[in-house]
Image 1 (cartoon, helix red, strand yellow):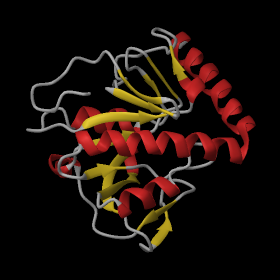
Image 2: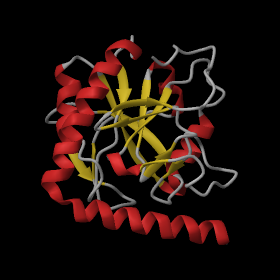
Image 3: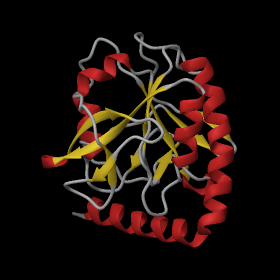
Length: 210
């Protein structure tokens, strides 16, 4: 319980700071972040296929990023929250029909849903985070959706890159995020100042991070 309490305390502090940034500052940092991400994807997403989360509340706002990815010709999958805290995936494009999620206060695209096997077609998964540290440890929202999902794709023939998007102050030095056995790492983090490659070891089935 001590680690869980430490996580909740850190998560609450970070959420409060996100809210205090205000809409304009969040949008400005996200615009800079998106520019770095698109440049990086040009070198590391050869099949031009990515996932992107639909932002909620004070998260880094992904609406404009989704539109920019579409204009750049990327195939975009977004997560669908399923019962038992699992994720499925569906295609996103501008004007896609949306409906309220059955398990949370967010609208999600209506369309065919895909399981983890669709990740064989995806270059990069953009993983939401409250914070990421220099070892690649990630603090999420606390639901465990992405930890379960990442664990479920470890046996695929080709595993996509796992990359988080966070505001500048949310990139922490190693060891500042409490870690539990089920927590999954990310391999890179995109900040308003640029892309940082983390200490997760490179895998032979994917491109080297540059």
